[in-house]
Length: 125
Image (cartoon, rainbow, N blue to C red; front, side, top):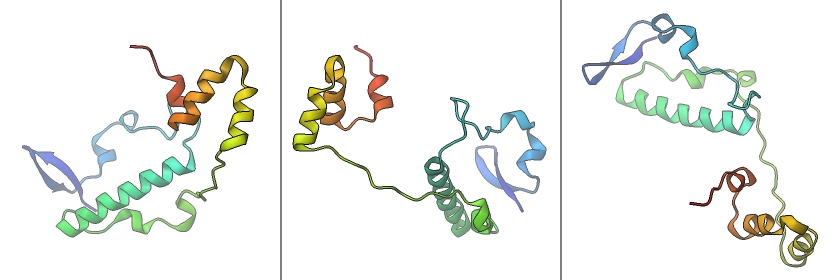
């Protein structure tokens, strides 16, 4: 298998594997920044993106084959989308009534659609 490496601003095929060129510490770990493993959705989306890049490189003749297509079923992340519950009308009003001092945060989430982690990261500027 050949890998693409930058040579003088252009990409060319290189016969060595990247693991032979770089120490192991330079490769990202399988753990997220918080220390836990990545969610199956994150792994699935990354694999989809990698597959598309490899297919593009294959069409251009930059790769001999697509390594993502050789993954066995057990090596692929398992992910099944689940339905999302959305509060509307009376249910939303009841939840906001009971939110107490946290009502502004819940209103922000309900009316903007922000995920909680993004809303908690907001800063006044």
